[in-house]
Image (cartoon, rainbow, N blue to C red; front, side, top):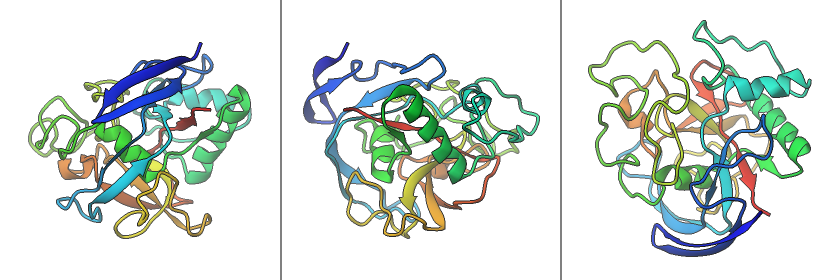
Length: 260
């Protein structure tokens, strides 16, 4: 049953219909990802300390729900089993289950959200850059959702838990504390695909909608850093580019669900 939520988050007073209270996970089907409702608001997108992330004002005008975690192998497997997603991805011997799915391309991610939409009757899609960073920050203005410095026990990245060493790959989702809005693993673990076309400093409009001057653009934006990369690349404002047809063991995704 939908509830009307009135809450203050990041200085914004909300009055919107959500399928669950803010921060309270919900699912649209047993095989679907857990989702978390996110309020609208205005914030500073980017950070001058992070490459390719010039700060500017951005606005989320509509509430939305975003995956509590990156899409897992278990969730991906349900789509493969129904013939809606391409199977055969290599897990590099790390295991599957609740680890995030890897070696998926943009087309794979789009097939998955199309399957979720058809299965649930709700609109699922990839997040825009603005939506992703707003959700990852959860009302904060610091470099990371917990503060200005990387601290041990917060993220899976190179050097995040001590000396810089070779890491052995992704971890199962949920190994680290959630941010203030209940999202897990927005820092590190895997780079996450977004719907935005790559541009040097990010979407110039600062609007919620994906920046897609050419929807068929070759390079898309990834967010959040990954197990292989140094701590700064796990900052909330961190950005990277990935060719739409390329998949990798450092790339995954999380989904957005529109709140009608």
